[in-house]
Amino acid sequence: WGYDPRYHVWRGVHAVRSRCQALLADSMRLEADARGDVSFVVNVGDSFYPQGTYFDDSQWRTKWGDVYGKIPRPRYGPAARRVVPWYSVYGNHDISQKDLDCGCRSDTQKCNQVRRHGFQPNANLSWYMPNVSYYVRPLDGLPLELLALDVNARDSTKLCPWVACNSQVCKRDDEQFFKDGCVLAECKQTLAEREVQAARMLRDRIDAAIAEKRTSLLVFSHYPLDYLRGSAPGGVNVLRALRDERLRVAYFGGHRHSTENNTNSEAAPMHAFTLGGGGGWSCDGQQGYLVGEIMSDGSWDNLKLVRLPFDDCCAPYNPVEDFAAGCEEMGSCKKYDCVFNGNCER
Image (cartoon, rainbow, N blue to C red; front, top):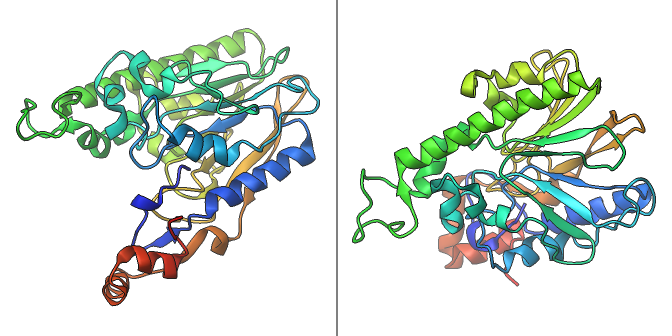
């Protein structure tokens, strides 16, 4: 999410309409109000699109609190009347120009979104990210764990040039990230080390769940299941671990700008979903989210995708040459984006 009209004049794709975030937020509000017991939100990253966020940044309110702040607190259930935590992970766009320390330094407590752990932009929401990878029991008294995994090393080849100097040594006179950045090798090493930590935590929490005779687990990262193929950081085969037949695992990823059910023979017995709807450079499919239920024994059930109509969030396909001609005819790509895609600055 985190649509920003300054960066979304796009061509050669189905552009994301600026109204999409408000439509998604309203749909989530209605869903939560009807159910009455929506107790937490799992947020799969790329939250502050496209360049991350500073610690003290208006985006915390304009792209999150002001947009999603009307989603109500639960009226009943184990979290009745409590603030709704947004359990969050970093996406590749979050580790960007506005959060260089997070991409370049091993100390994750320097990451702006980790530093904001516990922040409440209004009475209903709170930001939950005590570290880049973590686990938590989201509902008091229920034996269900939620695991957040930082596996941004999956995209380090594309991600690291956004935060790192392209030369072996950062030079003050020609590198835009001299002061706070790092070289490419440092960025890749930092993300690789985090992925190892995430994978080992996953393995340990699966072992703990089995030892404690728990039956279910919720796991999420920024990346869809197919990005985990062949991944074995620290000797842990992540995909194989998620498919452990001794547990019922539901896995949520994002990154792709669509809302997909990826539960298939490759995933089984795990249930897997891609929930990257609502933002990004383009629409890769319908935009939406997922809702589910936590049962009294700590198991999860009734996972359901909620998709908005394609045209509500996604503009018609616009070839590159047509976009260029429209910009020239109207004298401005911003004006053409407003007319063709409905993305008008306010």
